[in-house]
Length: 74
Image 1: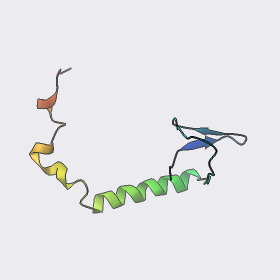
Image 2: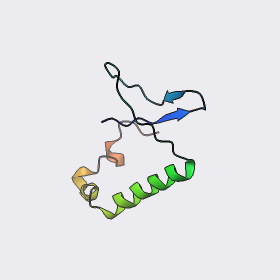
Image 3: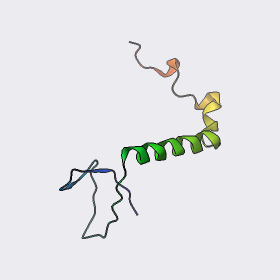
Image 4: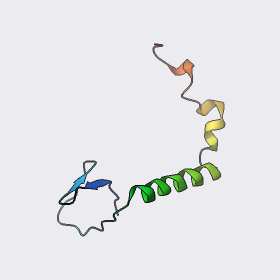
């Protein structure tokens, strides 16, 4: 199963990313209003904050985003 974001303008669906699918496939289209989409995003952020999924980033060896890793300072 593959999920792809898209925009429906009242006539056609435009995918927001390139998808390589071979042959005809059955699809399920779910229409989200902005409020629902935003609530889903908030729920995902909340779940990720409550989990320990990103705890590894607290380890100094995993800190690949520090200034010492810059190749060029602007």
